[in-house]
Every structure is written in C-alpha cells, then in structure tokens.
Image 1 (spheres, rainbow, N blue to C red):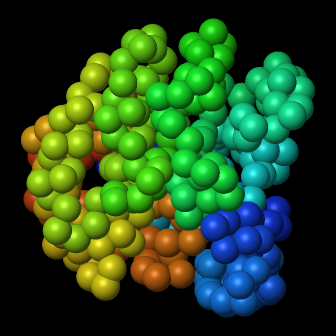
Image 2 (cartoon, rainbow, N blue to C red; image 1 turned 180 degrees about the vertical axis):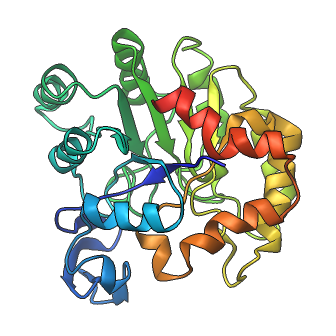
Length: 301
C-alpha cells in the first residue's frame, strides 16, 4: 500500500513562540520554553537543534512512506524558506504549505514572497492558543474580518487552506464560527488538522462537531490523534473510536493519514502511528488506500 504522510514538519532550527513565550532548541532534540520547562521535542537521532528533510526521508524510507506534506506553525517556528528549499530539492518526496501571520504590518509583502515568488499553492494557519495565532493575543474570531480576509485571499489565488484550531474547550476551538466561515468559500479546499483534536471521552462532541463541517470541500488529517489520547498507548483504543466516528460522519474519503512527525516520534514509533489505523479494523482495504494515499495525492500533489 502506498503512503503519503499528510502532516509533517522540517525545521532548520527550532525557534518557536508559544503561550509560554519563546521556544528554543537546546540540543539533542530538546527544547526549552521561556518559562524554563525543558522537554524532548523530537528524537535526538533526527537532529540536534532542528530536523532536516534528509532526516525525514530516512524515517519515510524505513516505514514505506512515498511522500510527505510539510506544514508549519509557531511550535517549531515559521520555516517558509527552509520548507521551500526541501520541496525544491526533493520534489518527488515533498510538497508543503506556506504560513504567515495576518497581523503582521507587512503581511502583504510576505504574501507576495510566498505565493508570487516562491509559488506555494497551500497555506497553513495554526490558530491554537497553545502555539498558534491565539497563543500571544486575545481570541480571534474564526468568522471575523481577519480570518475571512485570509480565506478570501486563498479563494482569489486558488490556494488550499490548512487549519489547526487547537483543542476542544479552548477559546480557539470555534467549530461553529469555522463552519460558518468555510461555508462562504465553496471553491476553496479546506483541510482541518488533527481531526479537530478530540481527547479521550470526546466521541459525542466529535460526532456533533464533525457534523457541522460535512461539506464537499472540507477534509481532515489524522495527525497527532494518538498523542491527544494521553496517557493511552498503542494501539490507542480511544483514537480508534474517533476514527470510527469520523468515518460514520464525514466518510473515509475525507480522512488523510498524518503523523505530525518529528515531534510525535519522541513519544512513539512511526510504525505504531501507522499501524493503529490499520489494526483498528475501522476501514476496509479500499478505504485504507484513500486514507493513506489517494485523498492526499488529490488534495496536495
């Protein structure tokens, strides 16, 4: 079975900015928040202070992954130029998304660089209050002027839009506002990360929320779904329940495998993050082909 990882990251050097201030690399795959906490951000064998495209390719080759989609966010720090270089250097293996902060005074200049000069066809917005747009400013209305302006620009430029709206019960997790906003742009393809990031016990919440986003142009990646079920470990029974809910509500053809590597590899192996989906028995063999390859090939490649 062919595989595309629809949610991965490279980082020339970790330089994030989060709700706990700056997040800097300190070596051996570890990072430190401005508040002092130190944690293992990614396995040390993948890099010292960042993760190269070559390091990802080694993981991909070991696990039979044909291609990956390189996304971005504030956690690792914006990596637009480095992501572009990875795509340009390894076009058979990578595509990816640009990102920008719409509150930047020079946002129009940034957009010109990303979409006119570098030619990105996908834009990703991390909107979470942990390490996204709302991490260091008051909550932003996902159906307000700022976000609608981003979506309108994407519509004008024929860009695919990837969104991370954070976790349930956080002020960034605005499913109703998001549903209202995306309904205005039927010609824009939207991908919502992490299957809306349900936690253990969120099956009914997920069912209701996904139901509000059933649209021809809305898709979901499954990245970090296991990680969001802590302290559960492989084979992640709660994640399997969420997969079953998602299939029933939006359909298997709207779901894309993704791992959120390299950070998720600090907690579990790539093979486990792949195999729990297969071993959940939620999907037929034909549906697994869509989840692992066909849908991401259509959306991103």
